[in-house]
Structure formats: C-alpha cells, structure tokens
Image (cartoon, rainbow, N blue to C red; front, side):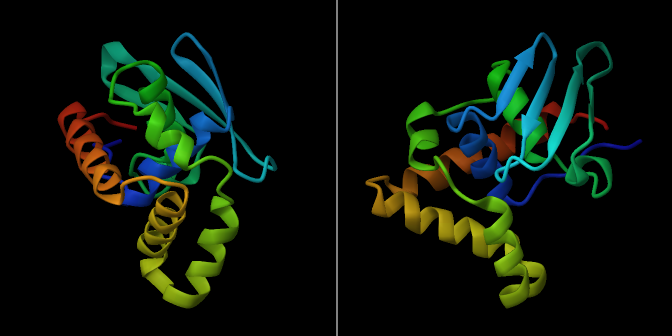
Length: 150
C-alpha cells in the first residue's frame, strides 16, 4: 500500500483526547485503542524497520490517512510530539457523536466542524486556541516527514 496521507486536523485532537482519557494501552510497538464511546477497539502496530503501520481503524485502513489510533500510538512512543497540557483540555470529548452530528449538518466538512467545536470547548476550559492550532500544524509536519505506509 502507498504512503499515508495527512489526516484532517481534528484527528490530531482526537488522538490527544484518546491519550488523556486513558483509552490507549501500549505494549511495545503495538496498542489497543478504545473509541470515544468504548464500543469499538482498534489494534495498531508500528513496523519501524519498514516505516509502516498496521491498524484496524477505518481512516488508516480504508481512507489511507493517519487515523487517530495511529497518531496516539506515535505520540505515546515519542515518535511525534505530544502536549499533555493540550491533551487535558480535550478530555472526555464524545468524538463519535460530534462527528455524526456534524456530518448531518456540514457534510464532507464535518471533520473541520468537529475541530472547531473542540477548539471552542478547550477555550471554555481555559486553553489558548492559537497554541492548539500551532501544535496541530507541528504534528501534521512531523507526520509528513515520517512518510509512513499502511
């Protein structure tokens, strides 16, 4: 399979939220990741010698971009940046519900709508949205540099 594409910005925040919520269990280069509802479990593996990942999450598997379970594992392994303070502001977000609601309202732009919704919530909780946006851009650049395959 080819190179993974850059994810929607919302997926970076979803990965941070996943870590803050304790929904990722890492064992070596593998992880089990629970969805925000706890209904789904994804398995992720980093194969460093081949610069690729295996993941059962739909974004990585079918849409060929870095899904949040992959991003969360890369953060946990220290391969890409992680910001624990930003992650705390994103705790407990019902991503699946937000994405489904935003899909009905915004169609194909639902990821961006969820991103903006998360920024508003984080701001209400005391975060600086500019800092969060800067962090997201940094992670997107790091993912681009990694150039991993699925």
